[in-house]
Amino acid sequence: MEPYASLAHALDIAGRAHPTLLIDANRLDANLQRLKARQLPQALRLVVKSLPSLPLLDTCMAALDTRRLMSFHAPFLAQLLRRYQDVDVLLGKPLPAAALRQLLTEFRDQPARLEQVQWLVDSEQRLAQYRALAEELGLALRIAVEINIGLRRGGLDQPQQLAALISAIESSGRLTFTGLMGYDAHTAKAPGGPGRALAAANRRYRAFLSACERAPESLTLNGAGSPTHVLHAQDSPLNDVSLGSVLLKPSDFDLPQLAEYQPACWIATPVLKRQPGVSVPFLSAWTRLSSRLPGRRRDSLFLYGGRWMAKPDWPRDMAPHALYGLSSNQQLMTVPADSDITVDDWAFFRPTQSEAVLLQFGDLQVARNGVLCERWPVLEN
Ligand SMILES: Cc1ncc(COP(=O)(O)O)c(C=O)c1O
Image 1 (cartoon, protein in one colour):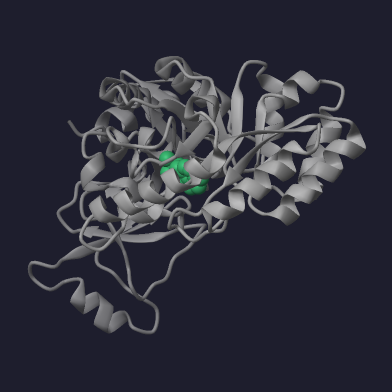
Image 2: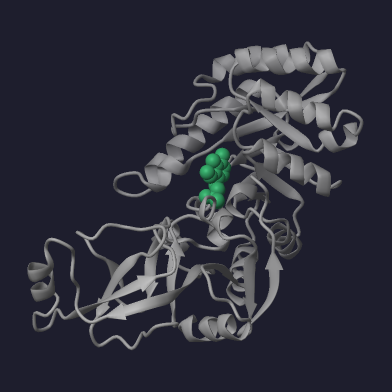
């Protein structure tokens, strides 16, 4: 069932009157249950950048019964460490040494908080920086290694490099080697489908794992993401799968293998003006005429805000105008002339991704059973 009438009613009774980031809690719950029902053989790790709000993370962690998180941003990591005492946070990218220094300095007197983190190292140079900091500040660091299994976004290229890096980690009494992180997002976009590309990525992962010479169950073997988690059900080298976006399903995740998940976040914004036809300055005669052609008649809406990383979703067939340009202040959108939408109604967009877009609207407004029932603050950037 289409959610727009119910969400618009919830916004109206709550007195909202400006662009709002809505989370549909009923749909989020359904996505969480779908994921749970898959019974993945791996532990689940939630990607914080894609679910950037502590109450949102709490909801997802409780439903999925996991305390594993993946973080990519030093300010977010600091907020996680201030809040939680019982999580395991794996970094999804190597942080600059200066960011590590700031975090270590803030939590220096709470070493147990820092022990929740698996810092990510992609090279000998990065490891040397981290080791020097651990020794200077007298702190213990858990270290995971980024490996390139085909994405070509950095990390170790060759399994042979791993043994030397692990020895360098372990030669310092302050560092412990905890596992591997190899992301396989490229396989979801492989020409002809993910099958062969994923098999090749898994072979590379196993070659790195052999080079570790450790029992796999003693390590975090992390990989995958929303587009590939469904492909790791069998024959996977991973014991730890991270994902986030699919739980809200922004439009970039409208992929065949994710069809069972539902969109659960929208930008809703008031319609400020409706005008018959479309009229672009300097081209008014031509644009007016083309918006009046039989079968293609369109009217103009001006919205409160715009230019988001988002796709128009409601009213049906709402679209930007190719010649008018976009506006963050009052976006022109055109709609079929027979559309019912009117001034003070709500227009809906689907974010293309959650990570950047969720941070732009203040608190997330949570709708459940047709009512805005909670406000979830987003993480500070
Ligand atoms: C290392 C890593 N793991 C997992 C993910 C998956 O996150 P999501 O499920 O939100 O796409 C990402 C996304 O960028 C990533 O960089």
